[in-house]
Length: 167
Image 1 (cartoon, rainbow, N blue to C red):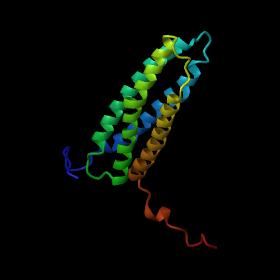
Image 2: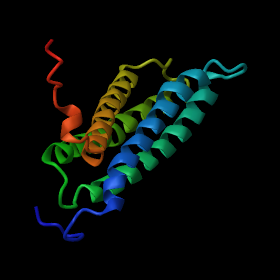
Image 3: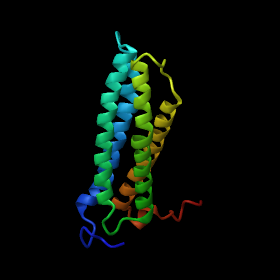
Image 4: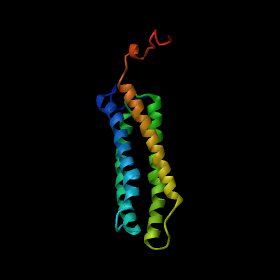
C-alpha cells in the first residue's frame, strides 16, 4: 500500500490504534449499555423527556464516534499495519456508517412520531441499533487485542513450551 502520510509507522498512529478503539468502546458501554437503560428508571422521567434527552445524547455520541473513526482511519494508512487490522477497522467503520446513516434517521422519525402522539413507541429499529452496537463492541475488542499484541511483544522463550511440561 502506498503510504501518503510518511514512510513508516509512528508511535502516534500505533498508539492511536490502541487508544481510540478503547475510548470508543468505553463510549458505547457508558452511553448505550449504562446511561440509556437507566435514564428511564429515574423518578419523574417521562417518555417524551427521555426520548428528547436520548436524541441529544446519541447524536453527540455518534459525532464523537465519527471523529474517532476518522482518526482511526488515518492511523491505519501507515506502513506496518496488518491486513487483518485494516480489514477489521474498515468493517467497524462500515457498521458505524450503517448505524448513523440508516438506523438513526429511522429512529429519529419514530421519536418524532412518539412525541407527536402518533406512535406508542417500541420498535424493532432499537434492536437494529443494539445489534450494530453489539457488532461495534465485538469489533473494537478485537481491534484492541490485535493492536496490543502487536505493540507488546513477548520474548519467544517466554512462550516456548517447557521441556518438563510433558512430564
